[in-house]
Image (cartoon, rainbow, N blue to C red):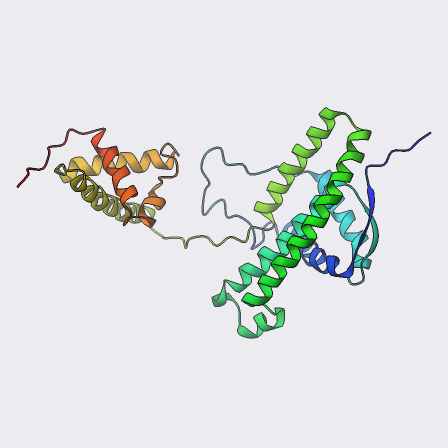
Length: 281
């Protein structure tokens, strides 16, 4: 009887392991810390920055996490020297995610000088040149692993049905999303402004000034401040519900000097109010 395995054999060099192991070890370290503390630093702060409706939060899968833990234990003896291993498609994808995790983690430490003492950065050898070299090295290892994924996918498709294959990859994608948000979220977020009502009033004031400029550029007289504020508040409410595409309040305020932003806001006001044309001198 022929036994079909979903794992493939490959050899990981010491250089490849130096790109895979740091990220994989950090991933497991963050997971263990989250199990003990219930929350870690590198986690998306859902309570502080509530995401919009329909935001994909991923889905934790214990079986997939057990596979990652088993991979971490198997690769631990080969962390310095490399060697021959057997890995399936999920484990190969985990290795690629670990490489990117390490790169993003070091970039986050390099971009946060206020949180790190210079000696700490020197200890990790974090600088622009080293990050650039690590990025090139990581891309080279990722391309090598992606070639092995093709072999692993073929081996997997021989042992399960097409529906099971699609379900497995969907489960992995959901778990990958969960890890990216719950364990390895390294993106810098805007500082929290206490007093949400005051901040929104300030945003409305700036949007009103933008709308006035856009309306004048379009050749019309801006409406009364009370009426204009009502329409601008309507725009802010609509953008928070993602009905205006990329033209959110934050996008508008970040591009308040751009003609396209003021034009869009002026068109929003014109579609809801009857404006008087400017007199030509």
